[in-house]
Length: 251
Length: 251
Image (cartoon, rainbow over all chains, first blue to last red; front, top):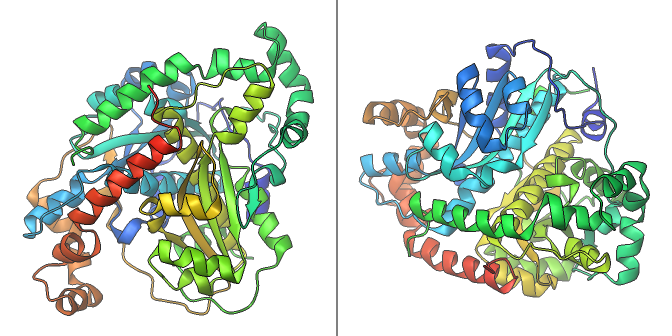
């Protein structure tokens, strides 16, 4: 049996999956474990949409920018902030729900993400591989249409799940001291930034990345290619409109 | 050695802590495991503020509505969406960051929450107890002042951490079928809601809760007392203002 610390420390994101199916009983086990995660006031204001059907995966793929994980993995899980179910219960019980606001969206999003990460750790402990798709917040409007999410429900993240068909090198992380602040936030000096990003910048794969993308620095690969301002501005507008449309921006 | 599935399934939130301190080496181990969680584009756009100092815990307490966990637990961790460090790196490397928008806030919040939940699971696997404080999104403005969080940084959740001095009964969860949707969202009928909430409503502690609060239904305890519309509206405004002030609502 593998120790939890080894599972958490040795993990890597898996983007290539074997064609082997994922047993429904095992998936259920993982989801039950996920639902034991902390949840605000025990309201469980989240839902999980399971995509297994080949055609549905194909339909979902463009909303995840056609990353091949979505069609290759046997299962994609879309984790949603969900006040719809809770609101319906309130209305059936002579209680007036007041959850059509931004705070409630955040509450649901937090709930959904704690479940997502618990399912992922449970999955990895069984030898499965996972990949988070950050595209969910970019195309939430389209995912809402496809998955038929009603008002009160907003997709927050998507995870692909399956048996690994690769064991990639583990990627780097910043040193822990770059991430933590003792008692209060100490802002970063130029010297700090130089020191904390040195290892990342000196990696062969980082340098390769800069050359391939014809850039001067690694940071430029992020700002000019991977996470561009124009895209962020565009998708921010859509996401804020989604929150309005799904009933989370009333005053 | 305990199996991961047992740790995930048998867990309960811990609100009473023994006075025993939490070793700094163990805390570091947990945080290192946390930082192995998936992170958008390996940007690690989060920070963790560690509160151990007695006076600082006392100062933090009112912003968590004086819940005693914050002063009793040896450690409180405030998990923040953080683009400040990443932006500073970009600027130092002739790269123009475009992360002053809502999408980027969500990216940082997602990153922060995956780390938070990983730290919690790592902690529980060592026998520690944890409690999430949902109050962080309510009083983010005050936490920002106290912890000196600069522009680009927003606190998303807080976790108290320590050795358990209680073993409370495990609380209920909705049946899994209430949470999951196969292929697409099937909206809930009245019959579904009745069935899914039956067990929760029939619990002795739920019924006690209704009587103590002088309400007619359990749902009313949520809407009229625990999570009231007026509070949600009020704190939503503050939180949206926080996002503006911290530089995440530019267009």
